[in-house]
Amino acid sequence: MRKSGFQRVQIRSSLSVIGWVITGSVNATGLGFWESSTSVSALAGAHGASAVDASALAINPSSIAQLDSATVTVAASRYQVDTSYAFVDGALTTDYSTAEVIPAGFFTSPVNENWHLGLAIYSRNAADITVPSILFLHPNESNVSPIMVSLAPSIVFAKDNWSIGMTVEYIHSQYSYDYTECKIFLGCSDYSIQDTTSGWSGGLSGTWQATPWLSVAASHKFSTDFSDPNIDIQLPSVTSLFTTIHATPDLNLHLSYSYSAWTGKGVRYTDYNDVFGLLVGYDDSQRLAGSIEYHLGKLMLMAGASADQAIDVFGGTDVRVRAGLGYSITPNWRLDAAVVSENYSEKQEQVNGVTVVNVQNEGLLLGLGVNYQFN
Image (tube, rainbow, N blue to C red; front, top):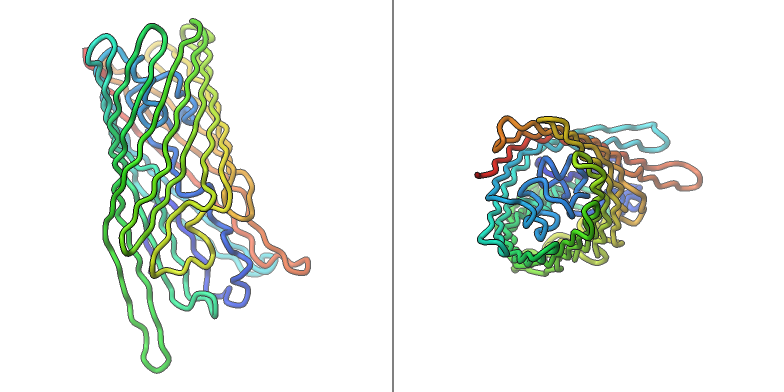
């Protein structure tokens, strides 16, 4: 029983006798998804103090005051994750791959000299996890798939060289829980629970152009907790700080730091026993990101890197490197492309000096985006 999704965990039934060693070993950096648009992916989301298009709404809404006219940004990203398992010092290996296309859309518009409005539709939290039957620990093969989509309007007030923003976020979750139950002499039966639930969150943000060559910004997304009889969803608060150095009229350098309070947060199903803790954070996550943006005629060259602290019991750091290209077809239209390569921290457990399980995840994201700025 398999499904595609943003994050997949597959643990082969051959691990029946050593299933306990992989508790939480493949949680990566949590249920969060940072690659909300093509330009955000290419610039590592580090450019919160300097809006390059309407997708600034996803990282720091207050910066949309820098956009002089109404702007529409749409993006689609193909996200592929490859996972390699090696058991008992490499005596047995298992590889698999999964991919998903993730769309997003953003709109911003100035109302007058001081007020700006924005609307974002994107996914920032999702998972798709399959756990086969494991003797004694997890008798029923099961799949859990909580996917959350955010609809987030923002209002921004700007004056002189600073702006502040407020965001209200409606989160719609479509979730499923599928499992196979097998009984001696009675065979196996498939069961499925599929439903939707929703909740609310929000955020505050601010941007200040301190000097002609320096912009700073901060944003805070509130934690939220919503549930129904089948599921309890607890998403963490996320606090981010941004700095942009305007080195020349054509060159911008971006840096950011984010702190996500994942400890004890996550997704809990009423009827699903998450024995490996794959849906709940064991630690908070810190994220460092940096990028460079250079304008050369009609081209916008982008490159960056980010490092995310893993939230599972094994810890480690997940590293992503990225690059992107924007091309202005006309003064109003710009096409963007981005590529992100992910190298997740290796997860390894040893018993008496023997590596009983080794898990390595690698990801690749290819993104395309279109940006239109009204006259």
